[in-house]
Amino acid sequence: MRLLLVEDDATLSARLKARLEQAGFAVDTADNGIDGAFMADQEPYGVVVLDLGLPGRPGLDVLRQWRASGNNVPVLILTARDAWHERVDGFKAGADDYLGKPFHVEELLARLQALIRRSHAQNTGPLLQVAGLALDEDTQVVTTATGESHALTGTEFRLLRVLMLNPGKILSKSQLSEHVYNFDSDKDSNVLEVYINRLRRKLGHDLIATRRGQGYVFGGGH
Ligand code: CA
Image (cartoon, rainbow, N blue to C red; front, top):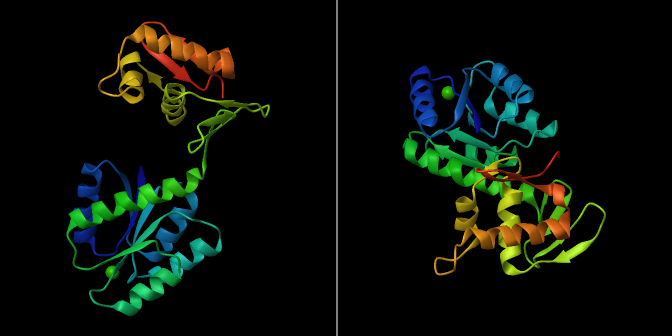
């Protein structure tokens, strides 16, 4: 997950960058509002941490410009401590969350993780759509690219959902079994093959490729 950090306090920026990288983010930094505004327009960041008091261009202006141009990247703003008006202005400008300075980095990390989860849930919408299939997770019905609908059994549904959440990745039989079965069910890998073949009969053989000795890959040439 790529993260843009726009913060002019060099000491704070370096400390946050190191900690965010430890937490698994690929971090780019900007120390002024002009560079920050430009970078988020050029690169597909997953999330932005934006200080409001910036040289060059105030953070609020930068945020307003992103939103006006349709850039909906999740943004957490850093505000002065107890400056409630900054928080109100920030939300009105399109911020998704805020943190008052000074703050604990652990709180920043927790807020970023929650923000990212929320933004993905929004983008997914009511249907999981991958490789021409649309899976309704409430009714457990899958619709193909040609408009045919198929009701799935519970096991078929769990298996297809794991595959659709990981398109193009090799999933071993044991990985798939972990996701598909309860603790107390029979995790015989031959049973998994039976379910894979049932999905292939319903949805087309090419959609789930077998990688001999490794497992299965969903998505075919999509
Ligand atoms: Ca500042």
